[in-house]
Image 1 (cartoon, rainbow, N blue to C red):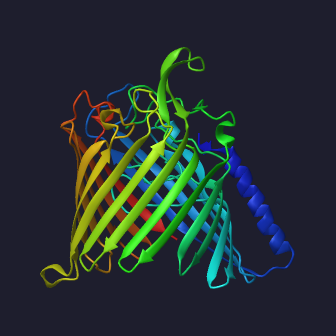
Image 2 (cartoon, one colour):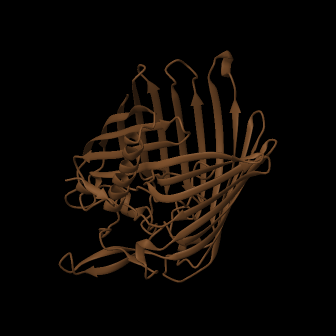
Image 3 (cartoon, helix red, strand yellow):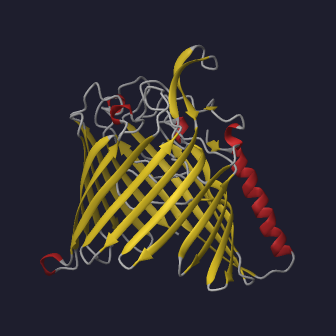
Length: 418
């Protein structure tokens, strides 16, 4: 059975669709396009499962169409639903509304304004490893452990841009809860996460009114963004608790705090070099010992690209990043003091063949995570991806990685673009 996350977004989609239908009925000329992607996935876990009921093989199908409507009056409407069915974990079979928003545009003096109303996805940041400043959308963790896939977020997003840069205001009236693997899912914690009964610091719970601001500008080769967020944290604190709904089972319950976060992201681009920085200061957040602690964290890195290697069209890039969280081993994420080394090869051929590999090494433990991804277009509509995710030298006392020490996997994805 597919889980809808959450039903409020379904209602929003219907309201927006009705608004779009009203425009059509009143005689507005509207052009439209329909495109998107469908894909088949197979994920194989070579090691035996750590917990009962888990499978060594998971197959799935994903459908993500995109509907785009544009009026001659200048506004547009984008709708991107998402559907996944998974053979192994019922909690991974789910639907979501990734995007469903109206876009309005205009001019003010020498600048331009833009207003997005509805459900949207927003990404901030420049680094490969830990996207510290990216805080608008919630992570769809059941999609991938790299935490890069995001759920749709209900918002009003206003932007003004001109010669002085771009200023953005976000009003976020509804909080999305993070998704977690179920009892039968791999890559889960030793205790099942009861994401159906989360707790909130705010008495308004998921309806607390959050807001965010961001300013960005480029100065020649230097791009910088500064941001501020005030509201419900996207990173839940997992608290052990006896669940009455699960017959007295000990589970982990997500708790969402009220936080304030200041962030900065910057990138310096030269012919061959990229220098990157993301840094935050977060207030009113609890650490792994459930003690409230203001903290700072940063990721700093560089990437160098060798163009047209050996006289071919291929480019070869080498990158390195250092992730640091001043809470150390009390950090609630895996990036307390870690190094990332990566290699990127873009063949720049007709098939758009690319290879990316990285090694993440914890400086406090012997734990390491190795990833290699291969992607290639087969035809105008078909493409394929192959990914290896491998954990090794995981220490028992590394509480972030030990529960998934047996969950290295090899995944094949066959994509159809329409």
